[in-house]
Length: 280
Image (cartoon, rainbow, N blue to C red):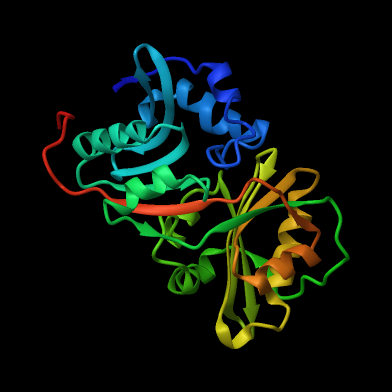
């Protein structure tokens, strides 16, 4: 099995995975996703790795990673192959080329080949997720108590924000061109937040959270309504844990519907430390 960098992506190879129930890519389901996850990777090689696997000159795999050197972080944007040896070749390459890095893999839950290869490396598996897309209409909801992020409430927002994720509150707040932050306040106290992307053809509510004592009081609905109002005519989609029925019901009541064939599984692999291929 030969592994080599790619300067271009074979459209026929890519198209052959589009409707494959086991090996299609959940992060390649729309033209906007393909633009952001494939074309941008070729245009910005300093922040990406685009790799192909080949057997006897025939392509067997396409793998695209976001690669942030300063943060030692990898994210799989596209992983397409029906060959177990292709996955082994890529993971072996990552172990040698990116020792000590954190790597997140988002892929089709039915892709047993990649799942098996990652389990053998003791990677951590998160709950399976469903993709839902906004239909374009929802019943009006009061957004009283919802405010845009401000430095006045920064410390309180950081304190309750999810810590076990790449996009911590501090990183989200430092990326205003990429994220909009909405805060839920009660009596002047920050009791919830929503991080949502903006400026894209299809934006995503990335992290929605309400303190347990304030749940089932409508704050999640208010945060989502404020995000939809601010989103204007742009599209919106999201990922939700498949087993989280209350969240799925909330999104459905706000005009989101499930997209068949776009479920995803996220796996985190802390690559063992060792000697890097890259010079310091």
